[in-house]
Amino acid sequence: MAKVPQKKLSLSEIQLGMRVKLPLSWTNHPFLFNRVDISSAAQIEMIRGLGVPYVFLLSESNAELDIVEEDEDIEDEIAVEPERDLKADTRKAMRLSQKRFLMNVNNSRNVFGKIVSDPEGAYRLSAALVEDLLSHLQEVETPFLTLVGMDEKDVSVTQHGVSVAVLAMMIGHALDLTPRELRDIALGSLLHDIGKLKVPDVIRRKRGALTTHEASYLQMHPNFGFDMLNRSGLFPKEVLNVILHHHEFVDGSGFPDGLTGHKIPIITQIVSLANDYDQQLSGQQVTSPQVALGYLFKNRASKHSESLISVLVKILGIYPPGTIVKLSDDSIAKVIMTTKEVSQPQVWACKADGSDASLRFLSDEGVTVQKAIKAEELSEGAIRTLQVDKGVSFYFSSLQT
Image (cartoon, rainbow, N blue to C red):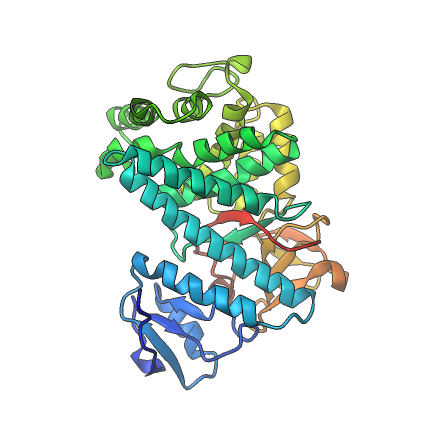
């Protein structure tokens, strides 16, 4: 794909839907990348507050097809940025995790698009995607989670699938499961909601409570997905079990078959837990990863294996990536990456009014997290700086610790 020529654009000309490049070092602005998809008026205000006279216009439209091109540019930036210190290495790792996440969401979309018309092609693509995920998981001895996203509040089925795969594979890795089991977890996670393709958008995207009929139809998506994949004869039975039973709970209250305990394979239980957690973040009610974790404890403790929930808590930490927190020096921050020190994660922090934003390493400063806070407790400036309305997803961190 040919690159779009860059031209200078005055700040007054920036409009929603554009993709722009900031004429700043990646250390001197609050965005994750120099390239920004303009999806809200708040982003335009933030750019106008950076003190730059212009930006570079990359595209009039931030269409999904441009994602791969942008990611290749990001890879180039990672390659040429000099290694300076832990903060620089962490920023590079964050950017690489984001790049990989976007690529895998794109690849997952391609799999979904071929599953009916070209099942063999879809299987080959999905197998390659699984190998990428496994190599990223095993890249470092002790992987941690990094906050990633799509600059959108609404989370797509494929974005959700990649995030569930990452969480489920982290659980499987912590349990020392075999590479084959991790592959089955990854493939089952990526495809677990493929049956939703047969659910009408008016039901799947409905905001607010579903009617009894709509809820019953939506609950058929595991059956739809199983039928689609089973028909091809290509997918392992372990993966098909995940597709059909990822909404089963150990207490028998799940669907479609009301299975209990040992009747649900461990691989399916792991994906069920990861899906249950990530689904809270991609829904309409819960946006805080910490609140979602609390919801699991309060409302789902009997529905999942206690030992698996304990593993997930260790992986996410007390303050999972995406959680908004108040620090012991009264700064406000968003958790970016989990670390060994659960009360001292790596954060993007700012003052209460949203000023002086920076990437901070709390363990180096002796600063700790005091508590998690709600979005409504923040100033408008802090909401813009921390991009509180951005969707939350997870990916493996490539940072060597």
